[in-house]
Length: 343
Image (cartoon, rainbow, N blue to C red; front, side):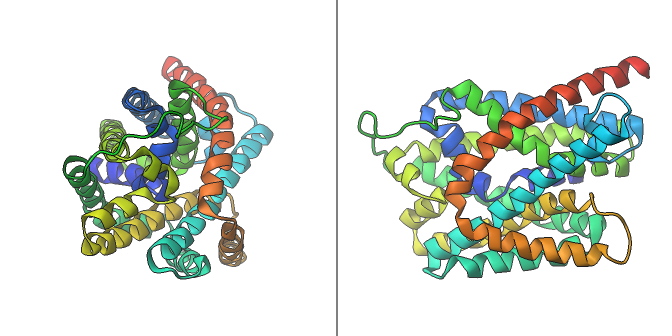
């Protein structure tokens, strides 16, 4: 059971930005070798706060986003926080729809709308089956996806030639200008979208020990994958900076076959993360006859919003969500220690 929880954790984070190397580049690679230290901070935060979430969920017997975050009982504030994080989960669907479009355009020269439409359609099919369908799908696809992305990045990192970047050719974002802050921002906004998945997984776990083991292994695997992607990205910094989906470009340098295979893997990664994020958003809907209509309506709306473009969304939207995520993580920390003290 714990390995299934680890795969659910991976599935919530390992979307287009992570699997393609775009996020690894923006939040770690732009700092050169310092980025490896950033991935250690990322690992610590994913493990620590993954544990905090599952402990709170099991002890408080809740998967409600607001109730996981808020360290005291207040329905109004709990609803407000839950809705805000739910909207951030929704923004992730928008970004991942855009990522599907970016992949179709970069790889096949097809209009981005085609890729976005495919992702939204697959997400709808899965989310309409509720958490059980998501759980079973992730348990099947995530081991293969993780192994393939890691294997491709390792092969590229150790076989392709290194191309040094000219001085000043690569600069970090103004919203995350130092390596340690960048790592915290990255972990913060990603942890926001894992709250509903981790909480629901914890309630399904046979024991708290299994839930803790699952999120711990998941957090370590995420950091390990980040380090391997980083090695590949630092081979050619200017090339990595120029690509919306860097791993696709590096796979093309290996062979056309590898480029085709990694395209399929990226679509799977986009789908998995978009599914978990959109599920988190739909948990805010009340059960009833209108819920399915709302799920369909907001998925279609997310597709149209995603036509803005993937690279732009990662550059500006994610860092801003990361700053909000820091405040949420502080509240979760307080809640965790209150639960431990009380129990």
